[in-house]
Image (cartoon, rainbow, N blue to C red; front, side, top):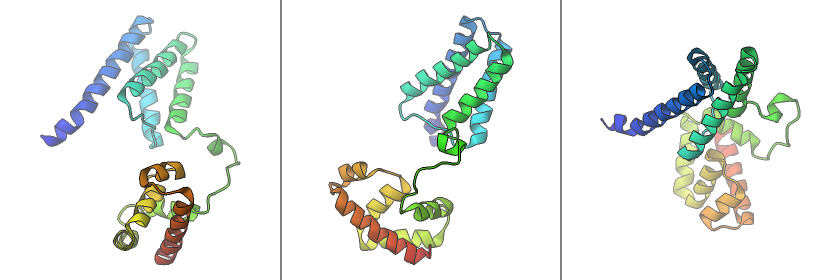
Length: 189
């Protein structure tokens, strides 16, 4: 019962959004099979990318999702193939996979913690060594653990970490350098 109550708001939101898109599509005189096709293509491409971006505010999500889908439905008035191509393109861009650094061979300079970021990303689930490191760090130096969590788990900026911990950026950088040395040594990175 708790699980149903947990997912119920999401289900209601998704239903209302689908109704809004269908009503908008009907209002601009797009045939129902075409509306279904565009929504399905958009949804399937987003699911296949496995990294869909989401808004924290349901209002923003509702507005932007509706605008994107309705604009794709308007394109169907010009040509269905162009609309399908634009649907695939927009779904990829909205998943975060259409970032310019992924399209070309240029990328910004890697951070000095990129090896740690990569290690944590690849080993974040069910890695006993990493879990043991986190537990020991939390026991020995809680502030270092919090900074580790903010920087490496939640990808927060120095400004965000400074606001959350009331530490200045220099002190945060020093602590993160200590954490980096510790995790590289402990996990043999």
